[in-house]
Figure (cartoon, rainbow, N blue to C red):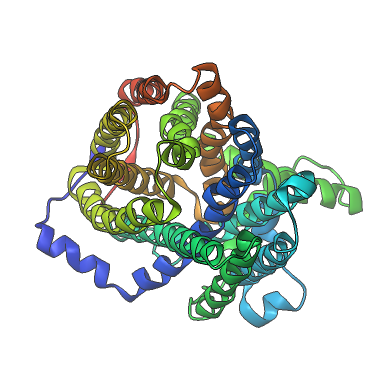
Length: 458
């Protein structure tokens, strides 16, 4: 059963003025920024150097690491970074370390050429993806731990702020990269993308400065619960020695979070949750991976894309994410998810209209606005849904597991998006219709298990 207590929108909106929400906003921006590097920036860089749609699409396989970061999430929950952890805290030390890797990767990109160093560029992109996926583990844990376990409404509001932050990092990075690349290109710099990556590296430094203002709670309770769960494995051994201690640590670190998840939800519901999470955003991912290529092919310039898709899209996302958070609080996560699925499908059909009509700034703006509305509602509900499911003893691991399963559907399958467009002989209209239909299986699963989910949204 889902327990809801109605409030006026004015009363609910006050929750966004909680000081913790500003910290969550920053964490979201830190998480979203790397996606623009290995997403639209890398795709357009390769496109303008003459690479094919299929090559660009398959390059997107580097996003696949997000689908598997749960494999090392247990280590992030337990291992401390020497020296750094004592100085800045367990969660923040991991974020800083990954940010340094991203910064160094951008510097490497600034001296490479796609036509000469394609394999190396993709490898560096993979490093950025791994660093980003790793920092996401601890960013999400730190974000969830800003809110108390019984603050369901604050968790929903925090989910909205995290989404706003993510899109702020993503859109801001996109605006800066596109405008910088176009300005540098107009000034006659042949290496305009390489110089753009150096400019983007400044954002990485600024975000790390802001991270120092995000408080981190002590992990004594988390460590205590983890040790208690470790006893379930240590009790299986009759003797205690170095080998059994190692096996206990490994079993508790890897098996503990998974066992906890299935015990809490029940086996069949747990599988249903996994299936829904995997399928929910596949259509959106197919559209997103090829959208910037579509915009370019029908005649929009980089500045057009920056204004309509990034700047206008960011404003729309912020507004409707905050409204989406209130909708989740008032009406419940499940209703929000059903609505988001329907809007996502309808939005993709708008892109079909744009494809058939041709270059039109009005249609472009309408499609982008509705696309961001759908993404806002869907992501807020999705993030709140997962956040309410995790066990605080394994915050990083369980959230990473569920988020990775969702990312697996969006990244591994969507990597074939370019090949699908080529198979359709560039028929973008049909492509977007197919992406609209992709949301249906997930909504069927959600409908089947709607009455069996046990969520407290007080």
